[in-house]
Figure 1 (cartoon, rainbow, N blue to C red):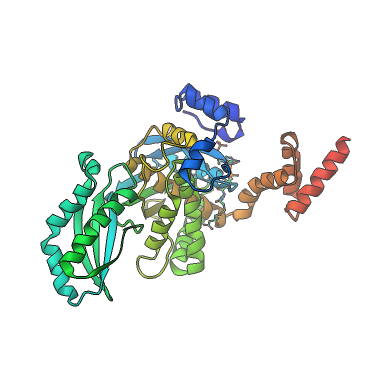
Figure 2: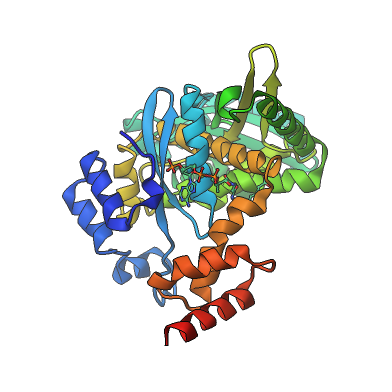
Length: 422
Ligand code: HMG
């Protein structure tokens, strides 16, 4: 498959390319062609007080090579240059054998917090003695996940200040598992009160999904950073420094991680997953040492002449359940990806995060972010100024020559363009 120049095609040419590469069947292609959206009656069942639906661009970042498989990755984002940057990075990383990922585990964690316990150490021991019984109670509360090969796996107890906290680890298979875990936690809460004499404060899933960690790595040959060897070395050094800066400075760490989530959120949203959960997990993980740090690292290996990147994140992603089956565009996203399993999808998403970070750091440590980002931002400004499709290219090219690239300038350019035409 040759994805070079995909961005320069029209929408119908892009759909043709998806057809040629058998990424979508005719029914799905028609849905995209006709811009079929989430039906209002379904939207009205998904959330409350519904008035309508809100659309966002549904795009494709092609050419990802992950664990030896090709992926064309659907993105949903309102931000210019995000999909371009990810596609750009995917191309470079593909030339260096792509991404390698490791799924460390794939389980969810729930917690019951008890209080008003006189002897917490004694209560902890009582619970641990009844561990098998409590695991069985949790599984009895959600038999369908047990039938599908999942279920409650482990139970731990911790004392934190006035609380006795019981953590349950659950294999939720292809689901994100919030409902499964919450049901199980509520099922064991009362038995835990009876065992300890304490009171339940709450029973709920934790979004700090440390039992769903995924690592993506890549190793970029320096010749793909720049044709000029000296320039490539300088860039690799600077990208390593940029990674160190995100470990050292909280202000930078926050922006560094925002860049990673530019791509992650776009795929999480496209695949119908809970992006708040993924963000919460990622930012908590960035703070795992007690000080918030950049999530990815880049190291320049002078001897091997490569730049090595790595990103580890909790990625409790689902391919079944929630709203995934309800939104037609979300179903198309899964079809484009070849209906990956939850583990495979998690690997894709973490790889996208690393790619996004690579593109941002490469731009930041070389041309600066404005050059690439503003080129694409100019299109949004032209649209905001009221340019019609046939006027966009002229407004953008003039806008890029201006010192002050803003809505006011775009409006003036469009006005003079229209005046010239009349
Ligand atoms: P370039 O070198 O001008 O790209 O970079 P190119 O024109 O040589 O094209 C190379 C490839 O990039 C293309 O290959 C496409 O894959 C892709 P081709 O298809 O031509 O064979 N590409 C595009 N794809 C779709 N639409 C486009 C497009 N242009 C190139 N219009 C590029 C241009 C924007 C890629 C580069 O400058 C870049 O990666 N910049 C970084 C942009 C970025 O990170 N944006 C995110 C928003 S900024 C932010 O919020 C995050 C940040 O604060 C995070 C942080 O601080 O860490 C920066």
